Image (cartoon, rainbow, N blue to C red; front, top):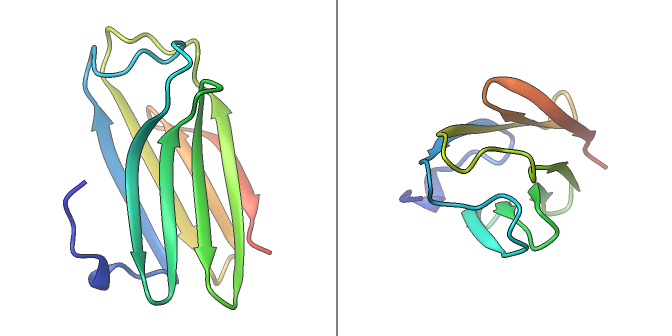
Length: 109
């Protein structure tokens, strides 16, 4: 992901991207970093982990942190998939969407 980290709003935001067909085998037990964003206020990490789960980690320094994960092992590697994450300090919640449907959410603590 190409971005300028200092412009990321850790208070509220959305990241949306596509995983192209045949780029990731979702059941191979291999770690794939998908997005890493950080600045002086906090960090956001999105990855496909070795346990075949897509994970979204959110850290706001001094205000809270949380994560959400979803078993992606049944996703077809021959198809394109959209990943969307949202976060909001006002709502105190993060959300993970795959192909337009919500697959997980978590409160920020």
